[in-house]
Amino acid sequence: LTANPAEHLLRARRILRRGHLSELLYAALELRFALERMAQQDLLFAEMASKRMLKEHDPIKKVSNLHRLEPDAAFTHDIYLVNKATADRIRWEEYKPLDKARVAAIQGRLGGLLHPKEGLLLGIPDDPWYVATKQFLDESLEYLNRIDTDNAPFCAYKGLDQFEMIKVE
Image (cartoon, rainbow, N blue to C red; front, side, top):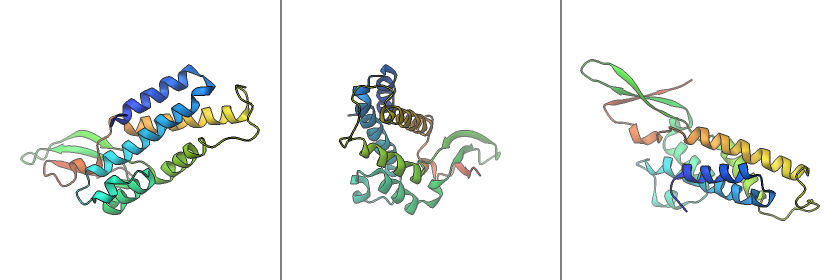
């Protein structure tokens, strides 16, 4: 295991590209690891996060805890480096939040994949379960990759004098 969500997302992408039906569950596992680590990274920077919050494995609870501690963390923000002497601003980074409802949907569906399926035609590529599962995994991968790429943790810049965070409407 790695603490870097990008590595889990890369492994999931490679597994899905190979297209082996027998490996779909491994891609799902990599996506779950990425989801947990993305939620953890955000929460790690929250000053008021308790040890109990940080030890929690459930990404839904982690996202909920972050939003409870920092309500603005539920929204996209542009982060600017500000020169206090000249008031010049340079766009520095962007914060893209994990959407709690989307996290819940992804986590629930990933968990459901681990249970035996009645009537599944094993190894038949056009079976509706395989088609729907592959589509779900591809969509989840793209969503998580979009959030993870070039994303700054919300609390990493919050409250620092030389940075300004502006909520994107």
